[in-house]
Length: 298
Ligand code: GLU
Image 1 (spheres, rainbow, N blue to C red):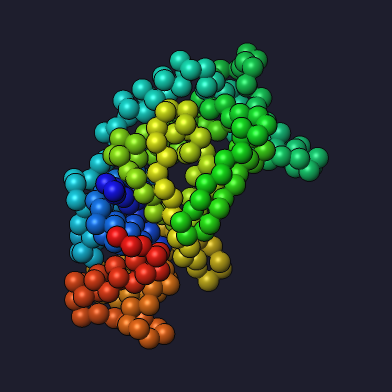
Image 2 (cartoon, rainbow, N blue to C red):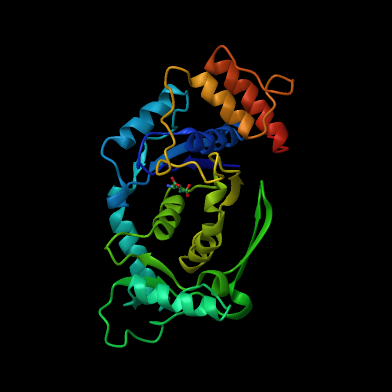
């Protein structure tokens, strides 16, 4: 198999423990399959991108011994590809312009909630803008059984999501003129011929949308594996926004051993996992433990 995996950090701050766990899982899976591991910098969300953060993340990965097999791809250089994908969807009649403001959508969802029905986008602009200016582009999701997307997650098991009732027609091009993550990630993973996606379980909820979009664009669907997210003491996903601290680059083995423990990898044959003396020793033990845990026979 021609395995190609990737780690796709958003440069909203330095690498923290939560993102290290995702990076490590994707790296171990690629190495355990003797495949390629790529890095993509997801820097198209202008308002959230922090200057210098991408270089910082790349340097930290390097310092932690995770070197990409190809030069990193920067999403900001891929814009014409997103435009082309949107044009393809327009030509197929699968997208429509939406004039709803955030407030209008929130109000209608509030109504829906009061009626105890769906929280999905109600499809207000499906059949026209009703005189409102176009703000965003949405992908039309199917009705009925066609809206049910099922996939087998290699870690979490079978997943089912009904796009019509749980998500609704979703945005590909945002009102603030930014490309939506859902479109960019699908186009980029296909361009890079990614076969296996390994990332945090916070993105599980996006996967059905991405699979549907792959089908609309005639693209292959990779295999998915979502690792448990790291939470803070309040049970919230650890993120740069809620104060996750940058990793200590002077102690990569400590952080890597903790990340391996989070992934349930038993590295020293004992209960607690061990701290290794060299990155090489750590990785060879971690790759073996990952292969065992994922029952890989490559
Ligand atoms: N850039 C996304 C994040 O940092 C990850 C996207 C992905 O792995 O699909 O949360």
